[in-house]
Length: 142
Image 1 (tube, rainbow, N blue to C red):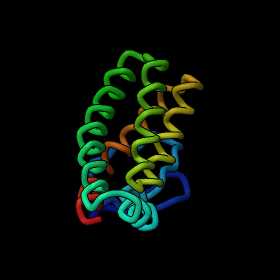
Image 2: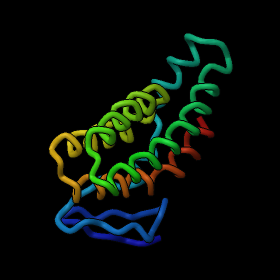
Image 3: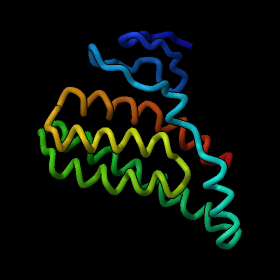
């Protein structure tokens, strides 16, 4: 486990220790981005068929990986409008599977795309990418 300090917040990275942080940016602990809201999971399981949640998670798994790749490509060329559109879709699909902290972080990325702040947008994307595999593990356990 590695310990990083960003601004005044110190946190432990468990998902991807080689994550580079942009100077003066305070990001939430990666572990927090990997959390799944149990209430959302219970609601979906209670409303739909037994495998509805599993199907949603499968769709999110493939869609989120693709969305993160699209975001990286868009930010490499400073294409903020396409990146914002991808963020909007990813934010909703993350919330649909109970990945509320991840969804909020994608919303912050969307705001940085609107603002045209490439440095902060890239930092947020790095954090999301670092958390993604941990989030997938948590969703598989839900």
